[in-house]
Amino acid sequence: MTVNKYSKKSIFLSYITILRLVNGVVAGFAATFGIVLSLPEGSNPDYLSIGLVVLATMFVSSQAMIFNDIVDRKVDAINAPHRPIPTGKISVKTAKIYGCIVALLALGTALAIDIMNGLYGISVITVIIFGGSLDLYDIKLKKMGFIGNTIIGLNVIALFVYGTIHTYLIYGGTFAWVPIVVGVAAGSGNIGREVIKGLPDIEGDRESGIRTLAVKYGPRKTAIIGSAFLLVLAIGGSAAAIGGNLYIPSIIVVFLIVALVLFLIIRIIYNQSPKWAYTTKEILLLVFLAFLLTFIIDKIVRLALT
Image 1 (cartoon, rainbow, N blue to C red):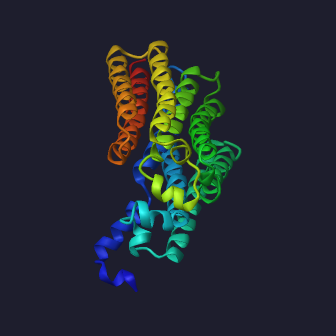
Image 2: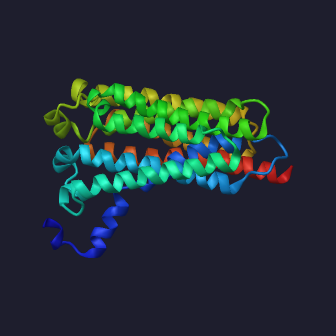
């Protein structure tokens, strides 16, 4: 077996890295964002439920990442030969079992959320739809290029909507507009990130028949299209910061993040090298996380002081 040449520690770490936990954390905070920002003034957040929402979302994201690596194993052998499946650290059969286990953990956690809060199965339904669409993306939609990118963006928006509905069903009141605006901005930003992700993978994607915008239109046009979606992220984030009743320090942080997004837009338009495109997509993941944390922390502080 190929795995015999690797240490147990190396193989164990492969089971962690294949989960892409950073992606899962960002997705978890997206759902949390809708929950926290929709809380009525004077209410106390249920941190156990919020923690379970983050966990369930992470499980959904991670199972999708596992199945993505299974489907993309031939492409990754060209574009990312260091990943667990191409190296042989995790076999395809083992990865399928691992993915199913993580998917069941997502369903179990979602069921616990619904039972604890009387949410009528909304969390379970969200997990099934969210996880199913991500798996469909891995199996079929990814090869359709921009259509697949759009599905990812819509899933991001759906997480924000779930969080808002979650709070509405528990606390009552009305939908808050800020989570929806930020959700649309984040969804657009994710589409832009997905478009830019195609830049380093042109060779492998072309051989595999994946019709990304980078394969169809080349690096320059793809960078411009991706940047247009990132611009919506910058505009939406700015609008939410100005109209969302944030504290001054939070507004400053948001605008610093917006400045970073604008820098990335300018930079990728002038430099589409695989190395910089890869760096850009990694930075954007941290940008999404920083955006969400800024709004969430601001809201928690506001609730604590009221």
